[in-house]
Amino acid sequence: MNDLRAGDRVHLISPKGRRYTVVLRPGGIFQFSGERVPHDDLIGRPEGITVRSSRGREFVALRPTLAENVLKMPRGAQVIYPKDLALILMWADIYPGAKVLEAGIGSGALTMALLRSVGEKGSVISYEIREDFAARAQENILQFMGPVPNLVVRLKNIYEGIEDGPVDRLLLDLPEPWHVVPHAAKALRPGGIFLCLLPTVPQVQQVVAALRAEPRFGFIETFETLLRTWNIDGRSVRPDHRMVAHSAFLTVARCLSPSEPA
Ligand code: SAH
Image 1 (cartoon, protein in one colour):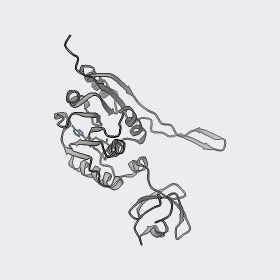
Image 2 (cartoon, protein in one colour; image 1 turned 180 degrees about the horizontal axis):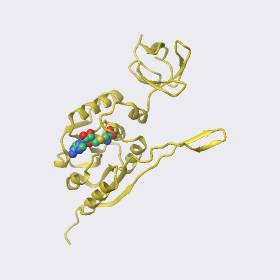
Image 3 (tube, helix red, strand yellow; image 1 turned 45 degrees about the horizontal axis):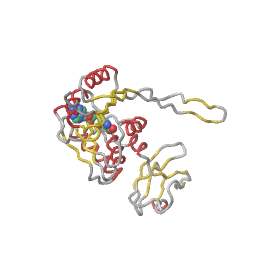
Image 4 (cartoon, protein in one colour; image 1 turned 180 degrees about the vertical axis):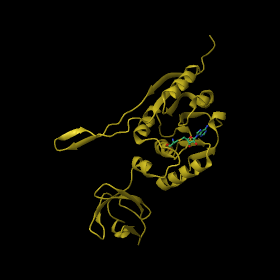
């Protein structure tokens, strides 16, 4: 059974869609401007149940998805949006058992998506230059996933080199990934994948030029994704008025084997 248990982190979602995070404990009470919901009304009940507060307001109780958690968790750095996280996992071809290196850890959003996809047999190594971000991210990861023995965080500037090769995949979310291209060419295994996220066009030009100059990289592609949600309400069936119009350009490249002398 997958009923709600003590220790679970759940979202109580109000009729207006506001979300309150609660960690369930026996005897605990969720209180919000004079309203109360005893945790014991939730423990042992199925996920998705509706409970009534002391004022009669109805809340739906659901465990947050990773995407919901990413948007709600405390952020040190800007997180990667769920629409981009989804794309990264497929285009960087993250698979169970993979050894993945990323930089920097930021708030840990991508790290969590990677940890889920590599599974217990895989590993994630994360380089980060800021100690406060590394600590914040690890706290976020612990809260959402519990202890993760297959994550290694190194306080390290990846522009200066990579000491963890060979790796299967290398993912970069930092401002000047072209400095990493020469290190990536040595640290990625043949067939490995390089992926970086960048917010602006000049940055993309610079990283693509660096990848093209490095013979070990090929099949270089850059793309972006626009996610447009829709309003479906009676006869009002149309795109929503607001959207995130820009987040990042993704650039992907494949690591090839050094060519044999002719
Ligand atoms: N992908 C993260 C967000 C990363 S924000 C997430 O999903 O939450 C960019 C991070 O890169 C910041 O934490 C910054 O401190 C770190 N960073 C910048 N330059 C770096 C470098 N040269 N080496 C390692 N980390 C770096």
